[in-house]
Amino acid sequence: MTASNRKVNFCMNYAEAKQARRAKNHHDTSTSAPTDEPGATLCVDLKTDMTPDRLGHKHILTIVDHATNFNRVYLLRKKSDAEGHLEDFINEFERQHDITVKVLRSDGGGEFGSARLDRFLLNRGIQHQSTEAGMSSSNGKAERFHRTVMDSARAMLWVSALPQRFWGDAVLYASYIRNYLPTRSNADHASPIEALSGKTPNVSHILRVPAISLMRRKKSAKKRAEKGVIIGVDPQKKAYKVFIPRTKRIVSTTHIQNIDRLDARAVGRYMDAVDDEQNSGETAEDDHPQADANNNDNNGVEQTGTSNSQHIGDGDNHEL
Image (cartoon, rainbow, N blue to C red):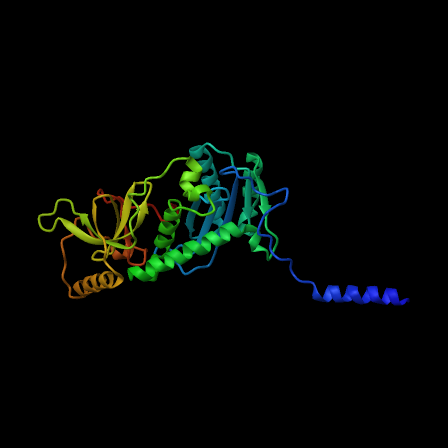
């Protein structure tokens, strides 16, 4: 063996011993790079095994449009529900915005590799790109968005003094707000909705959450309003979701008067006062009959509809 051969062997061994991961590429320059066409590339991510919220959701499905940063978040009880929600979103997204989804990017998790989803994507002509194991940065847009939404949700819960089981409502509202906020990665700092539709959105309905509010009571001979805490919006009904601590109900309504400029201590004092009133055994007038506790599995919180008190589903499809 010559010296040159020994040198080659030594260098090869050293290279094998010190091999490290390549620095992550901040710019996708491959032939499969996403286009700047709105809606053409969707980035998806699934966060699993979280502490159940008030409706039993343990998983979060995040969908982000790569070009405009438009997002949709779904709360799931089972990971297997992810593919159904993803298919529904693609169908709605394409129809409502007159676009065509061409690429789906995921982290390669099993929930995005089912035969059903593969067949759906194949029939639609959508290319499925999976990131390499341990390289979540390849799907960084969805990962970063999830982190941002969770940070916002934690801040809402901390300020509101609401129980931790309301994290699902906070996540949904944080996701909803992000679609209306100016985004640095969009041209002229346009909001995702504006970048997607070309129209400046109306943000007058965006309220600080949580916020103490007065909700109109129907057919009341005494007080005409009920105090509550706004915890989000119900886009399907174009209404706010209001938590009534006295009755532990969540009502969707547009008949509210927002009491702004209350700090966290004011919210906390109000919540404490409600608890004291309940503990003292006093019963206040209620427009709606109290649900049987044995039939309520929402961790002590009942979900009601608008003024006609229709119940809102089973909680699996509360997306924003």
